Image (cartoon, rainbow over all chains, first blue to last red; front, side):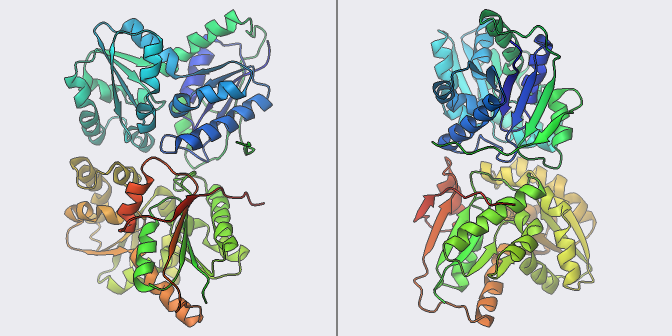
Length: 267
Length: 267
């Protein structure tokens, strides 16, 4: 099936998912939408995030997407069910693949999850772990300053270490043996997080989405074996440093990107 | 003139301006618009901020505003001229009143200005100081982590002190004698800023807008001497903690607020 895979995020952090998908599915064409005009989603209301996510999905579907990947953790936490209800194509979020991976690697009974306040307080991870039948205890912790610190470029900085210590100390005391990084930006802080949490298992859900998507496409017979492996990037706003930060996430030069406006969508 | 004064901001930080206006103009009715669905503006492109600001102004004008105050520093930095061009009612931004005040209190030849990256790099402050005929040297410094730190509630915190030291050290070395706080959130960090910068002059432009507006209304014979001094607050999204943070800025309980959608506006 030669139609593209659609991937959306509130911003450009979701380009880590593009990178992971390109790695396992090099022949698939990808269209990526970053809603940079309204980012971040994690501080908005659940109603707003659902509405924005439906508009994002509509954009990708209008451009022929055969499959939609929600690369935004806040959106995957609260809007996945509604998107599945409103659209007939298959949709996958970043929550579930990370949960499955964490359950595979966790050895003791405690798994930590970090994310934006909205992701953590939505209870989406607890629900997903429960539905996957885990016996582990899930300990969530919101880390709202991690995203601005990454965007400031302070990946290895005294301030970031101090913030990480303050946020993660409770998880350390809880003796978790696996930490799920529930936000697109957090993998860039892995070095700093490791200095606080030490030698435990780390799960970057963005990286897990690729293999789960590959499996699904195979099962549904929706693979593209003749594609050129192109990536088209659409952003709702081209802000000052989008290219520099975007390439940090994508891991390669950003080309073929355009600014677009989204159509409103009746509620 | 009994029509209301319209005030807008990207979020709820602009409620400090509402507080200042209510203090000097207790009989005026105020309508406030916070574009919480799209905040922050400071990380968006200049094009996007101008477009959002025109839509915000249109909303206030449609509700009968006789005068518009731009309480958002990013918006006042890049959109003031375009708003004045597109609308016939008088418009004031937060930049100019702060500049005039800083020039009154500065004793030596160096004035510091802090704000979001967009506000500082736009050059709006340099332009305003120049047009006001200052002889002082203006030293700008972007402090992008200050807003997330205020929203995290870390007003008096080791991390905030460390961040302030890193951002402000160059201004301290420059021996500025006056510091202009060019962002709605920064006055809440004044205690921490003072521990780094010591006993110099601080100018909170939000507080200066009230007296400038009062003077303008008198000169234009647009005062409302019979008003009830009501405040109506409109937000484009009602996010989780808007009320708690809003009341921190407003300095009194928030009542009479509603969620609204903005109409798009042809470019």
